[in-house]
Length: 292
Image (cartoon, rainbow, N blue to C red):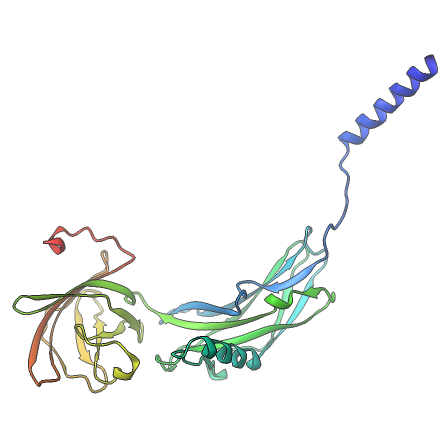
């Protein structure tokens, strides 16, 4: 009987000691590499005109239950064939799709395509300096990259191995807007223009309610240039558009609202005077006067 009691006590002590100690089971899953934000292949990165720190950032992640124990070097490469594949696939599903164009080498710097995931971490970032000045604002540029190899020969997720990074240029005045465009003296029409960044302080948008289809690009658009005071706005025609600045146009940085005064010649040759008030959709409209 005493022997049984002693055995039970020893067993209890052993179990108690085991429960208090931490058991290291080590790595539970194999390490797998992939490019962050590469699902569906296409990723759109926003870049501001005039920014001193414009970088295309490609992040590589090592999926595992533990960080890497020593520096892991992942080799990337530019993959034009991936961009071709994306264009062909997208065109099949959308007859209006416009091919994206490979970003010219003159507009980025890439001396090394290697990403280092430091010991104790699970991801690394490749920063590619971008030089957007001189790019055609009406072309969708993209930089396709893919994982080529790594120093530990870890597996690479085939569905997340490649990214087509599209460069989207913006500025502090671009975006989606909504408001009213009044044919003076009193005909009010609702408008929802998209203001496209053309430089650090210039945007392009459709005139009044004219069509914004690409085929009318030369005739239906105008430019807004915000002055150094961030308040005054100059209006000018884009390409062959018949638009005239009537003066007094303004921009409010706090509310991101434009008040525009201009005229344009319609298809019948008539001169139409316009007062247009539009506000960025990211900012709530709190002006009671707009609802009257």
